Image (cartoon, rainbow over all chains, first blue to last red; front, side, top):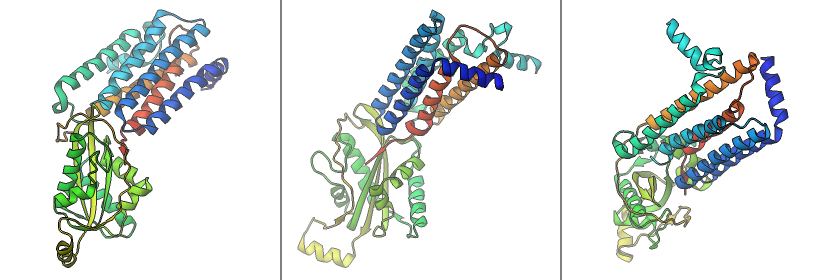
Length: 93
Length: 290
C-alpha cells in the first residue's frame, strides 16, 4: 500500500497542474449538467466537451511527460468514444 | 476453475504474459468495448423502444404513492386519485407536444385551469407541477420536494384530489417524457350551482401554480406508451464499474511491482471515468421541473 501512495504522491506532485486541470474540467462537467439537467441536448454537448477535453488533455500531458505515442493517443480516444456511445443510449434513448 | 482464474488474472493483473498491462486495458480490448458500444447504439436506434425500452420508469401509481407519503409526513390527509384531473393532465401534456412549449401557460395563453375546465373538473383551488426527462418516479417527487413552489403544491392542505399524466413524445427534437401533476379541491356543489348561474363556463379559482413561462421549440407528438427497460442504465453502470476495477487493479499491481511502462495514465482514465460515473448516477437520471 505504501508503494501505491508513494507512486500517487510522485505522479500528482510531478504533474500537479495537469491533474488539477483534469479535475477542474470534471467538476465543470458535473456542475454544467446539473444546471441544465433534463436538457438532453445540452447534457450531450457537455459530455462531448468533457470527452474532447480528456483526449486533448491526454495528448498534452504525454507531450509534457515526453511519453507521447500513437498507441497512447488511441487509448484515450477509445475510452472517450466508448463512454460517449454508451451514454448516448441513455441521453437520447 | 483454474483456467477461469488464469483468465481473470490475465484480464486484470499486469504480468509478463500480458506485456505488464492488464489485458482488459489493451488497445484491442478497448476497441472491442467501442465496437460493443457502437453496436448497442445502432441496435437501440433501429430496434426502438420495443427492445431497449423507453428510458423512463416513471409511473402514475408510484408518483401518487410517493406524493401521499410526503403528505403523510406533514400530517396531511392523502389525496384522492381523480380521473377527471388525470384526463386534464393528459390533455395538457399532449398540448405541450402539439403546440411546442414547456411551460405552465401555453404560447397561446392557455392555462392549466383551461384544461381542467375543458374536462369539467370543477374546483375551488387548483395547482400544477410539471417535470420532464426523469428516469424514475422517486427522482421526480424528490426534485419537486426540493423546490419550494412545487413542495407548496404537494403539501397544500387545500387540495384533496390529484391527477397524473406521463406522456412520451418529441419536444425540441428530443425524445422527452413529460410528467404533469394536477391538484384541486372540488368545488362545493351548492357553490357550483350558484356560480353557474352568475358566470357560465367560467370558474373562479385561487391559482396556486408557479408559472414559469420558459418556452421551447418542439416538433410533434408521437408516442404515448411507456415501455421501460433498465438495460441501458445497467449496461452503462456495469461497464463503468468493470473499467474502474480494471484501472484500479492495473494501477495497484503496477505500483506494487514497480512496473514502468509506456501507455495512457491509469490515474487520468480513472478520474475521467469517475466523473462520468457520478454524472450518470446523479445527474443523467434526473430531469427538470417547472
